[in-house]
Length: 472
Image 1 (cartoon, helix red, strand yellow):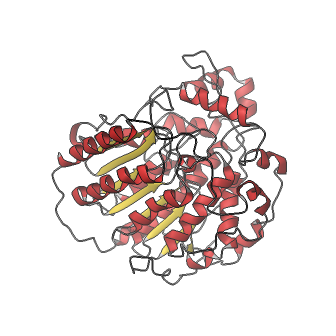
Image 2: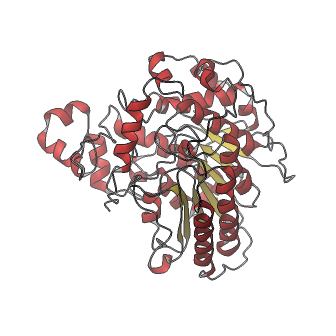
Image 3: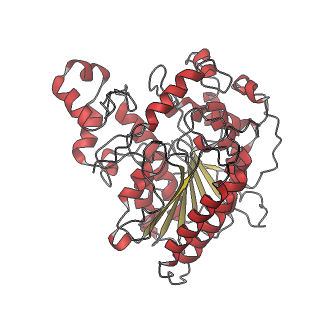
């Protein structure tokens, strides 16, 4: 569907500058089902979209055309054999075809044995698997093309951000790494891209993809230690070869709150911007770093999480915002809705959640967008000292990089702008709001006032035991 409201620039933010924002949403992605009891629930993206619409934020953005990624576009990063396997796999085929099942397990698909003897089904074989991957990857590619075209300053795809997937391996609920594909698209137009990851889990797949590149700097802030998945991302992991010191990691202790987080985030990201001078920035906004997430233990508020968006929005560089983790789905939708408001410059939206089809899922947070939860862990002696040491070490790593030359941003290249997807149909999204074919109770169980707390605690423990690295 050809679209496109060429929206006016969004309102000015605190920095006084307007931003032209585009947005991707594909309702089909939200209908994907990882299976009963699985922590990943794509329906959270529909909840986010409905909440964004209820605040009137769609009027401040250009809607990008829905176009799934073509299989050949996935090959810009992924192994051909792996992409073909994603297309061949079905639940029935996995069950009945021994050779197909063996191939799936080799690539991290379906229940896979871990060193502890467990068989978690993190990356289940689901109906329409390749189509799902093409959908969310297509969104990130469309958003990247929009930035390459030069007509937008910020591009959003909340269904993307699948940072664990590797070249030939599914991992951590991620099948295809749309982030790597989007960064490669950006590199067709921009010479240096900074990738910042605020998911609770280390952005291992993206880091590994660009570990030896000096065109991409990866910077991951993540919960670390105690076997927490994926078990990588030490402060001493800094890239290799030409990419030495272009992969930076900021490991965090469980319980990290807004203040402690930004005492690390702002000086490190600010220095990275100064030294690396990226021409484009990608921010993976995984919402499992929020307080109250089912699988992680950080304690960021919605406002504290969104401060990362606000901070990066203040730099004069095209910004791609992607989703990621997040397993208390009402919290996820609240966060990404507010971050959309920050992106368009309307961060003073009312805190009370408007009436809309999903409003009852926010009961547990008092129908407040910026909800409050009780801190899981009180600060301990030595926490600040340890965080200070990590900050110093990360800044030392950045000091080892020769400052990039101060180059003006390019004029948009015609070739890079080709295929930019802008949607003309302003009203198209409204008809999707009411679809409720998913069981209402199941979504309720995945909100913060659920009765399955112990189940998710155990699932989190299983995740923490996984420390295998990506297979390339």
